[in-house]
Length: 204
Image (cartoon, rainbow, N blue to C red; front, side, top):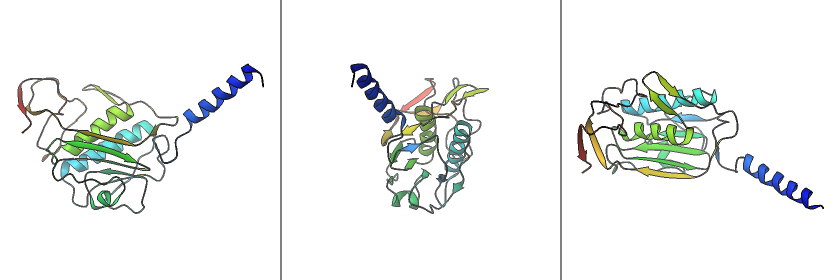
């Protein structure tokens, strides 16, 4: 084999490995058979979080996932909020000791969980997922950039946790423009990444 053919073969194998979704990874370009599972008794912000995830996944992938309160299979679930199904899955974790705005994103195999402390952690976790792993950008009150996923978009195992160093009680400017209206009971009207120093309190 000539040197040029050798390197061409190596490049071809490299590209094949790079472009093929690893076994067991979540491929956001192929969500057929997936659903979004919420708690059997969700609070309003968890319902809203699931609806926002459903909306932006549909806009990015063209696939609108059904919302369910039970998991009918072992895999292919987006768990939003802590539920019995989430706890029994391979991405189960307990949120009872998490702060109001703490969040965790966990991906293992073909399951993904986004959950956090009540009342706001799960909602903030969904927005963190959309920004960090889908590339969604909330730019102005009238424009949100949602990249289209048309090729393989694998997510390997992820275990991301966040606890905000500051608690936002009010903000006069630079509000989170992506949120059309937080439902009653969310306990906040601003996203925690808002850049404003109107009233800040350290998290206890």
